[in-house]
Length: 147
Image (tube, rainbow, N blue to C red; front, side, top):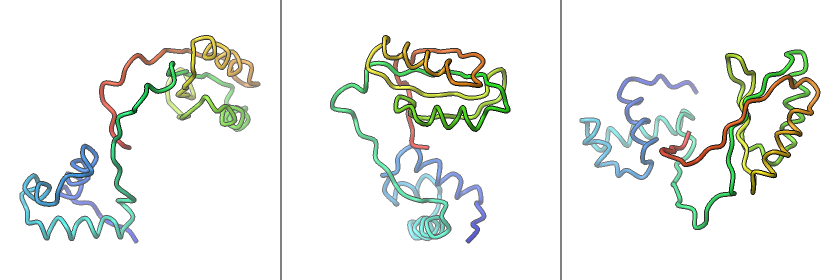
């Protein structure tokens, strides 16, 4: 089923991205419509597969693994499938994005130490088809929203 989103639907989705637990009454007030209109729109968005679930943000009881980093990877385009398969096997890589520009991939890593991070980056560089990498350590999260 295909759902066409109008500006009010898009605004509703943006409000839910910021706080998926907003009461329907507050959503209606923010959108300038009735509570029943919001309920009907939510139902249509859920039935249409636009909204696939709701989430809650949780403060971590303990800090996440010590080091988080972003590694940009340049590769030979003919080796992309093999490079992606090899990187997908690394448990330290939590996300892998295709990107445009000088680099081809962006890998998000999580390790316990800088020593471990260094070793993982060395393993990434050793993958056949990887030409170059550029790494940066993430220091703190200033804003995080569910995708």
